[in-house]
Image (cartoon, rainbow, N blue to C red):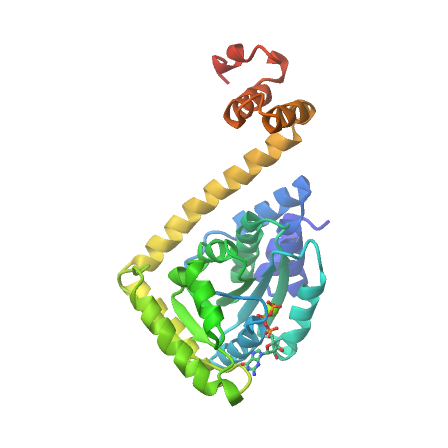
Length: 339
Ligand SMILES: Nc1nc2c(ncn2[C@@H]2O[C@H](COP(=O)(O)OP(=O)(O)OP(=O)(O)O)[C@@H](O)[C@H]2O)c(=O)[nH]1
Ligand SMILES: [Mg+2]
């Protein structure tokens, strides 16, 4: 295991292996690895909010990776360095799709201005934001000024990604079923930009129709930020049509949010939410690891399942056990205990 100062130095001087190792440590479930990663991250802080953070989400197979590759190549051409963090909520169960993602962005992966990193989410929605955010900070400290986060649209993961980025791009493809589904799920609500992709060949006309539908649907929604009206862009990752428009829209979104102070506000809110998500996850993890809790959990679970004790009462009793293992059943004594 490398020393933190070595990793910090490596990341500051453009050593990609140091960046990759730091991200691996951040993603580790081992507490000592996490400590190390956080030491590295904190040593690299603070930085201004200079990097552009873009989230790309959409249904499985909608074309996210292909779109990101096309956008990434365009962004590199515009003189930027781009990091792509591909989050797969299902990665714990099947490593397959992540590998496929990586191979799909073959052109982008060849570029030295790009860094592509599949990010395991640990199977939880919370995990998406948690580890990816740290990977994002590390990438930015390394010098990537554009970070794109890909996530499969499986309901809650979009809002987890939205909490992470400046601009949220929702990718959709022509087809009414898809439109209705996303609107129903409230996904469209978090979109700053809706990109109707696969607008090529036989799909061109349908893509135009879908764009109008989305434009109308967005008009009915409450604005996420007063300054920005969500924009619909028609693209094809295959032909490259509309990709420059997407990038211009992202830049315009950035300019608008910066001008009225909402970018700063957004990032502050996100940082605070991040703290609370860390506290929630850490606290829960510690609670679960507590041997006294683990020993007593089955009886309380059984009690709740069989209707002998209410979930609320069981939770409180277990929490009291956790707060003071020695107190055991005399839980009232624990309530008065001052830590
Ligand atoms: N015609 C056309 N096909 C596309 C376009 N973009 C992607 N595809 C195809 O759509 C399929 C899925 O593309 P991906 O980029 O892997 O989609 P994804 O959303 O990343 O998929 P998952 O990560 O598995 O959810 C592939 O067969 C692509 O070749 C496009 O702009 N036009
Ligand atoms: Mg993909």
